[in-house]
Image (cartoon, helix red, strand yellow):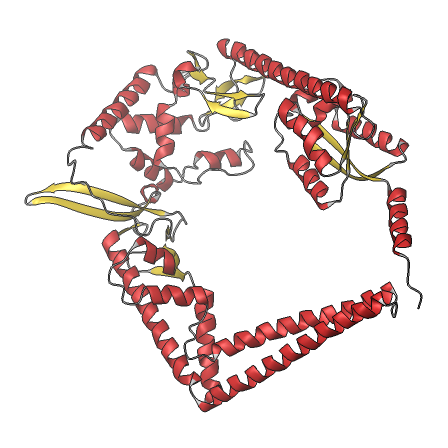
Length: 565
């Protein structure tokens, strides 16, 4: 058959590419600030404008639309922009069209990098319609100056807008104008003025109860436990019931830290601290502002707690805080140095929380005593009838040590049994059969590779057309893939008949490293155990690191036993 000209094939490809045109992406970005402007900046209008432009240009074919809403132009880590870049990398897109340079970005340096370095590197045509910029027809000497200048102006504009927005917020803070997505527990947003709060009469008594009980001597943990026992909904549950929030982001139980936060919040005596956090709109970064730098407004709204009770609560908390810190160095040099061996591995079986180690050092008659306990931090929030949520570190760590030793002993036993089974005549014969099969597969592989080499020579000599060559080659390549898969399967099977086989390589190495272990270490725990769920002082559920590999090894030993029986 006649051979096709390579030049003819190349021309056909070139012609097809010409017909297809540039694979075009239209990119739209709209920040929150843009949304406040005229309607022409809306996403819909930008898209309509750009698609109309693409339709009118016969060299462009629209492939996809990429829209980033409510995203600042000073950052390039944007979801849709990143998706567009990935499509550029894959070759799906080779032309990007935006309304103007500011839609690409308002950061001078990064926008310039994309226009002058990154897009050209990937062979991407870039068009900014209203700026009359097209990288395909631009004059490098002229646009090399104009584009950076416009980017610089965009960056200056972004900084100016950020400063104006921040100044506007600060002026409103000084006037006592309050901004919050939700009001603090005990209050609700004023329906007539979103910057004001009203007392939520449904839970006023709960707030009063918390302050009264704390100033009366109850601990925060005890207050939280009593509220849970009385089935009073925690703030997040209450807000969901009232449809204030739609997704529960917080705990569904009262906790001591919630009580503490409420006791510290001046909102309950009618004051507000505004501007505790400020957002840099230019960089899109939220930064914490020191409390002294906020705007404290007294008598902003109706108080739930009188000032005397609120101040008493602050004094009591400060007194307890000072008492705590005064005892921290009491046993300096002899503190409990107990390592948390089960850190991140031990979980409470009742609430699912991680259990953390709690260390105590106390003075005894004959010296100093060290005590370490793993505790569920939420245990103080449950009633007294619930099972205990803590366990002595020494007890559970002894249990873990015994489990690891037992696990290793079982592994050694299984490995020894497989070793004996693999020495039996039936197993030896099976291995010989597999080695013969592997040799046959390797011979066939060599032949197929030879066929491919001969096929190429015939193609270059004009015996086959390109289509015939490619079709026949594809068949041989498919057979090679199948042969490789079969060979790998046979090799793995042969390995299991070795007298030294011990299962998965990583599992075998781990068990070997810890044979004869006498002392529990953090490394040993992590090596063998992925999770421990504690239901009581005597009931645990353990998930082993190599659970699947261990099961596969045991199944193999049982199968081999039946095979050689």
